[in-house]
Picture 1 (cartoon, rainbow, N blue to C red):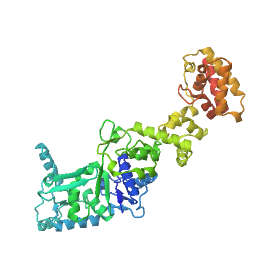
Picture 2: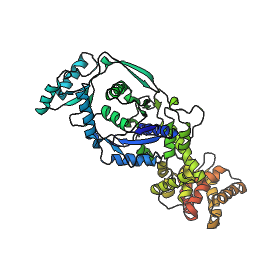
Picture 3: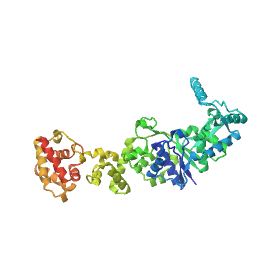
Picture 4: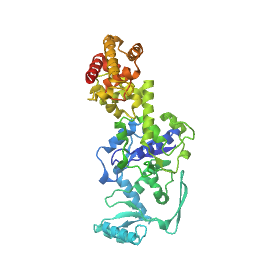
Length: 474
């Protein structure tokens, strides 16, 4: 059975790049009728954030990426004895060794290598210590790590399904740490043991781990484990081709969800970062992505994370949800209730404003004029091809006719027809009627149509605002 895993570290919020990694693992597992598993890699104790694990799980579930081991979640900090036992076994097999080098010695070594323009690496200072000598040091209370012995004079061969075959000389690899002095394993040891025990068939992870692949291949061989297939995903980049980071904007999935980006839109956009279906289709449901996804269509080159493009996707999803009145629409309405007061019909406000939204967080600013009319300048009321006299005439005629409409008939279509009739019957232009009413109601030059605003504000508030406009022009 195909098994993939997503293995985040609970050191903060879910990065958008990590979401893509989780998504690709999910899609491949589901397409192959396999399992998508979650593992919490919490061995870097210094960087742990309280509550981060719960937040990660909640975010994955909010995104619709349910994992198949919810009742049997693997957390690395509960498995320290297992890692230690494996590391010690490698020592007894002469495939690893105890290293007693202090942090100060390693710092000095690194500085010297940099000064001599050498690649920083461990100099194997403790590699030839006998096991007896090492045990004596341990008994004496000296701190140690366990390092893996990179075989000498070996060509290490590895293969990645995206990057192809890789060959590295073993002398270009240094003896990596397997077990740290605090008893916690490094990523290199823990992820291999866990992947083996979880029967992971495909390791889909970020490209930053590609340089470690030859070391991991050697570890698999030393442990006698069957190797999974490796897929290293291209980096996510800012538009300037730099690595995607918080310095240039939001990168946490939670930030985007808080701003009112829809989970389906975010997933759809992220799926297309570094993967292409091979046709012109751009919009995919999660079910469609499962059917279409393929590992051989993942790109090698880094993928640009473009917020403008994400905004376009999200805006389309918002409009479609409103049009279809589906489950996503109900979720949108729940978010809108947390953003706007219920002074007016929120469904109407959303519908009128939706064509101007990139995300739901923009609702507050886009609809502010409904709740608090700004103190606009009188000259804004006069259209560039009109004048003060015609503008006052248009506003007064509208006031008179609107005042006579029953509350039950106060609807967009009838209101728009009335304004058109005023314009035609009095030989006025739209700039003499529609323009000043729009500004009177919104205090803005750009806003929804006058009839749309009239319907939402209601008769009483609409008449108050139009009277205020007339007074401003006197």
